Image (cartoon, rainbow, N blue to C red; front, side, top):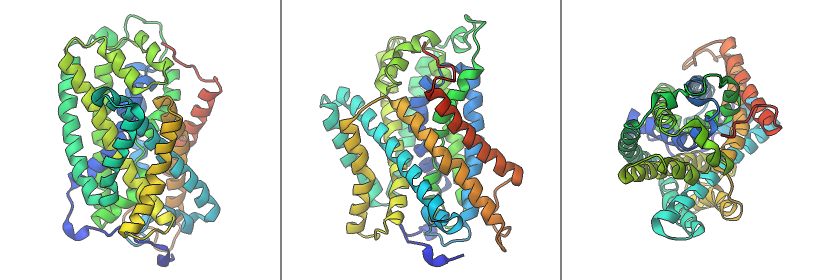
Length: 417
């Protein structure tokens, strides 16, 4: 394997002994923005039980696929990136296609977060939504430009802030949770399972941290600590998702999701619908603060992964000037798109999920199969499962993409409220 292909995107901080919770929070922060704000609307048709089953299955598959990337990366220097490994193992054509999907997903997620932040900050600051979006990007992308350590620190703060506002908001919602609403027992003849298929692309995006795997490996200096950070991060995300869905679905009747879905699942529409069933203004404010923290944490986490990825792809140096160039190609295109073409949050997440199946499931499975065929492929870190697990991960990705396109064509049942 050609080690000369490795490019130092940023220096490893192995000697600084970074904490497990810091890395887990980075992974969780990448996930939770998309999941917290996209899953309630995307899962309205599947409702409580089938939504929980869908996101739990997705979490398991996506955690394993992240470990598969770690296994493939073990043949390279710590400073290697997803781009380098894919090009070396699978060739230029596969890597080019993978690059397009990685950038598309990262860009469309940043685009969705920037647009949503503008809509929320417009109400808080009183500024125009476009000005709010610009300020949001200028201020918070600075953490990504600075270093992984800065993202670690702000991610821990944001996750803690999210937990506090989440607990306060959820506890306020929990007081009003109606079990008949939570499990929709009023409509006993309703079928929920078919709607879970259309939900899977959003669920997959809700665990789409894979562009940050290389950063985690470099951050810890080894695969096993990075593995634990990934598991910790996806477990945190899953726990928050389940608590959030229980609180939303137990408070807002299934039939009242119609107006939210009509507006493309936009975050402000969801918050407005929740406001109509929340009696306490303080609880409503806590939910709004939580939503903003979720968007911010995911914006920074996704930004870090895309930043590192593009730095390697364009061979930008790890200097102030080089990092400024990487900042421009990372954040400027989604900002411009947000200002020109704002549209539904869940619609954007759905497209991202379909494209993300390539680099979250299919490419990791192909890489680990190639890795195990090498002479020293079975030495060192190894993801659990054999050929069956590889086929499971790849099959899950293919089916998720197929479900998205079937939904677009109107073949899958669509819940309208």
